[in-house]
Image (cartoon, rainbow, N blue to C red; front, side):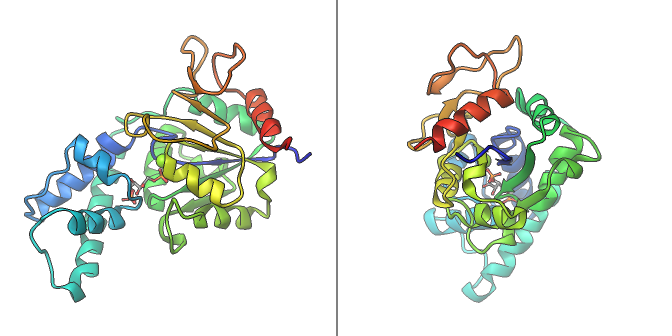
Length: 259
Ligand code: XBP
Ligand code: MG
């Protein structure tokens, strides 16, 4: 039976609740800067989050809602790219203010995982610069040394729920799915992981994903938890545990691959 060797970790919604107060605000600041009468409120943004990738999300919005044409078809990609570059700049400014902390248990579990010798990788749809902006505040300036691989954004042609980004990360690490456990927050992330042959996926839901279908996940929790701030099992049995630690991850991984 394969041993747990690596954690493959999603970013937005998993490491931190970045979507509403981070990405969504950065998109709205960009629309205002470009003089567009678009505004993504929380409810609309929850719908738009069904599409991963900021550029893809803008195009989905254009295709799905009756909004003013912003460019002729042959120029649309270039305009979307410029909007997204501006959005990413705004997002980095918001992250630099350090107002979006890591979710409960994230820092503790990552430290424990490193100390126990587990290999760590970031596997995210967001842009690489956004990972740095979040983690140099949330962890420390040496945040990159915590992770063997940072698989992010456009490094693959198809974003989650496509499995590409998980395949890419495992290929870079030279590791097979049965030695890995995934931390995710969304059905898109779960589908991407399962599609890449990763059978051990721990979900921590958030405001946008709490009602999604997580069939196939090893366990679904409200958060990773900390001593004094217990997590709650939505699907699965914590057997009295009040926070996620490496021992629990190893038990989940064993159960996922016991067959
Ligand atoms: C979440 C996403 C990203 C962010 C926006 O990624 O889908 O698109 O919403 O970031 P994950 P960008 O949950 O995989 O971390 O605008 O840089 O795409
Ligand atoms: Mg996510």
